[in-house]
Length: 548
Ligand code: NOJ
Image 1 (cartoon, rainbow, N blue to C red):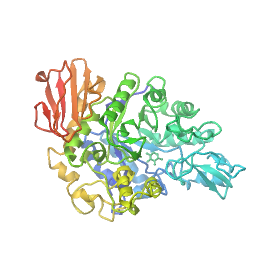
Image 2: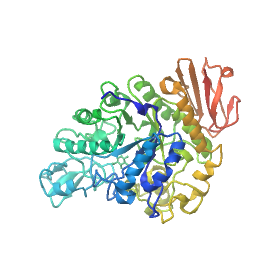
Image 3: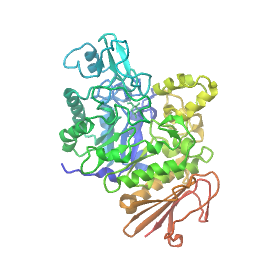
Image 4: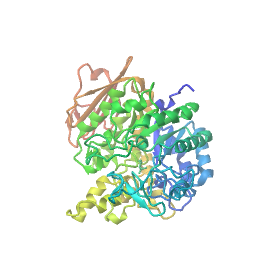
């Protein structure tokens, strides 16, 4: 089927279901809650929804440990609620994509239960290895979440590989039967009418032949041996050929540690196997590869990441644009300023929304939710946070260790969405499953609905504007003043239309810089966060100039 690339004209909203909205009063976000809020999502100008996993799961990694791929968890409302949401989404002319998590399953999945008992055909569904004669682990790989990547299974008498939590055993994608299972899952949801998939850590599904040891510092010395493995393109092409090519759908691959050149092997529009890629460089302007190695925020690093992807994909592939998701702390707390929350939130919004690609918003980003800062590490729920806290530098004070977690933890961005100023932020009438950020009385949707200048209404304006400008959809991208650590300035140009985007990332007043050839006298300011036309920008001021 000829690809209809409708996703290029869309803006997506990511729902992390357990914290979005509780519809039945049990304290857990669910699909009934989503149903109530479909019009709200549409009102933002978003026409697509990505659901983080909503399948039955023991919840060891908040749903990224799936126990049944072909059902919806009862706590989210089961299949009945899902079908209503899907219908509601389509009735509104919107699209819905699911999270496909097939690098690993839950250890409670039937396949794993049978595999550990060596019941056919499941014996080789996972990556099992005997202990080495010297008693050592099969190799030196580290998991991303909980120490070593191998856990001994008494029942089977072998180690199994888990690149994430102990309860997330890796599937053996080299087994053709496993790939057939994946295709069955894909067809199941596509036949039901879903419009595509976000594919979780998909570049990990093919591991290096023979599972060789990693270098001691795999990130610095190339890739870990489980990323971009020898059969990755073959398997993805197989999924495309056997499934995706037969549906009007799209695919978005999550790819840790990938640079544009390598990304093109996956997403080149002519030769690739998937449509878009979630890259991590734009998340590394204040850390070294991971949020757990925080550094000072450097605007130049953010700009470089964006510009690299804009330029290197241009004309060949399509960018996925994002600032937040469920795996990173809140962006204003990181790249902006909590003190200038509204202003910096707006500057951040403009900085990415006018690039070429398909933007994604993460729930709560549109109202400028901030990092959650618990007073006790015991309050953290996330498996990765708990492990990292327990293994963080014990020589540091408890307070220092906790502060680092505020900056690093995924839970910083996983608190319930703040809908209004009533109890529990209007998230639930019951007892919330997780802590509500105590700032909800000031920061909530209802208050911002009532204020035409709120961040929420700014997002609406910005998204609307973006959709009306062909220069944003088709235009070329040019960045100016690359080394300026306060200003991000870029232009987009297509036929007779030209825009200049100026974003200050400074708490101080800053002189505007305008590249030659851009006559501000002849331009209209079509978006901004201050009533200001002067040459001096206010803190975190942003402006979009238009010539046509
Ligand atoms: C990436 C997901 O976004 C994250 O939330 C999850 O914990 C890991 N993959 C493992 O599935």
